Length: 329
Image 1 (cartoon, rainbow, N blue to C red):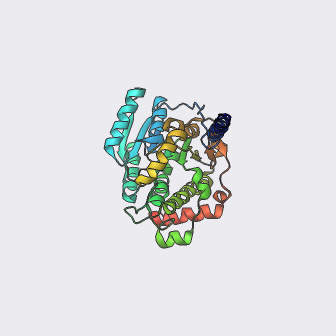
Image 2 (cartoon, one colour):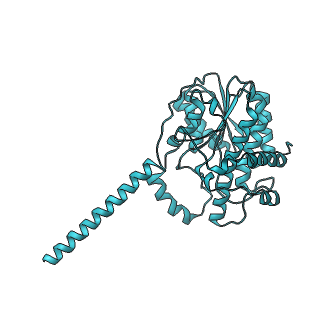
Image 3 (cartoon, helix red, strand yellow):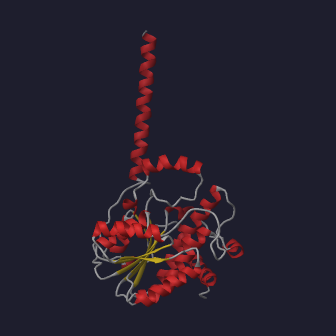
């Protein structure tokens, strides 16, 4: 009996210790990797026009809702009209705004990007804010033969931004915001591979297309750095950001067994789309950010990107290669 009590006592102590460790890890992760933040910016948006890619779901929809609530005209560039219409209806019902509209945009098609930009230039008297928000994790090729993650996450947004720059410069204080990721820290841009394969990586294994995703997010940071250099002396500033680790449809293309692993973790730790939109909203609404043009943000504050994301030569080469790929050189 004494022995049994001793065993029970030891088991209970082990259980308490395990619970304490798990709770400690949970609290640590929520204070670091999964830390929440709140946008405090309050720039007036009434009368201003916002263009956002992928605004039909996830942090894009949450961002569009936040800007519509502040009185902005919001143009949502999306591939799927039915989901965009549903998102617009939800935003209208929640904010009372009647100035949220859909325009078709498929970032996996450079023709679609050009058509979208030309439509905006013809129909919109002003564009004050461009939010390059859309992104995906997956394998495959774009309509033009580029790796899908390079083509959608970087190249389509690059072309869209360049085509809209003159219109943005007409605004007294325009901003370009590109949603990157902390994954850029593990990224690498091999320009020889990019030139030969029109992709940032090869192979269809999970770790291979995740590596390509990291590479595409590094492109976002390098693009913002070079864009900032080219915008000096203009009325346009630009920023990129890590939104946090979010529960979105970003990984909708991953396999079923991967979802079985990811789903419980995401529900326990990941941020909601509303929480994930806060840093984007900070970059859009915070006063006095112009002097930080080209910077990388996280948790509603400026943060140092990875050292290799500050390589000016790589940023310039990526810009020139992207121009060539888009036929803009």
